[in-house]
Length: 371
Image (cartoon, rainbow, N blue to C red):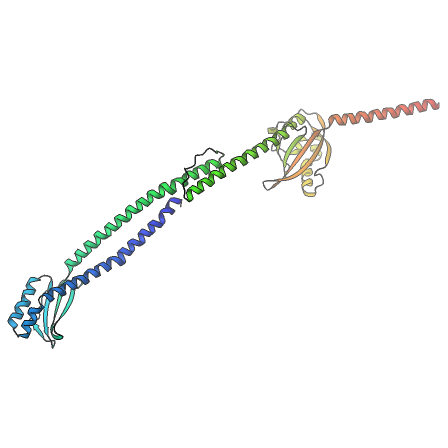
């Protein structure tokens, strides 16, 4: 999951939680409150005719009493059902016979009981079933309108939040990521978003500082590598970099001058390619074992060995070989420094030959004088 859904997830979860709250707690609470208000208004309607009922009861005027109740039944026909008047003993006074009308669903009915009281004396009570289906529909419509308004406001706030997140958080982070990708590829001219005063701005400034320091460090490293390359390429001795398996990894230009091989001709080959065929056939893997011995037992590390190597054109040359050991990127590698000592060997041999000739001349002179 990328960062945009992560940024949008909290407000979405908040909206979902709020909608659940509206649907399962607030909405039923509003309907229940509307039901209480409707029942209270029905009490007030009965209370409006209470004085006439009290007077008819006190005067025992049943005709007036019935007329008043019949008027109430007629006025609220379709809303009030089974209006019943009981006296103070609980005896039904109105109607004379139980009403057998068809009732609405039970969920639509509110039972109302109203006591007729005069100065603390109970004269009777009225019970009626009030159909509040119209009131409930009105309450539901009002509730739904309010919910839609709240949902609309939340949707508008969410869209505003989405736009804000997109422009203030997502786009700067995308630009930073693009700059980081270019930086990873060595491009230091990637444009950074304009830093603000928030955490994203601080991150942008820190990234810019890091980019400058990294560019400076890489420049220093490249300069150092270039100096090392120049030193290796201009050194008089040949240099081979060899793996721990005795395979040539790289060489400098002096190897070409000394042995005649280009670097591309040596890379991947064993060091044995430099030996004369006669030595190679008698001692296969000689150079690899030499390197391995140097790595395992340090018997040749840092010590000069004199041997003959075969030039690319086939003639033999005398070389001095010095093997060094180092670690690179977690693996052991070796450096083989090769020096052409052919002239030195020739001079040494010439000196030996001259010394032998001088000794022979001295012996001949001594023998001549002795005779």
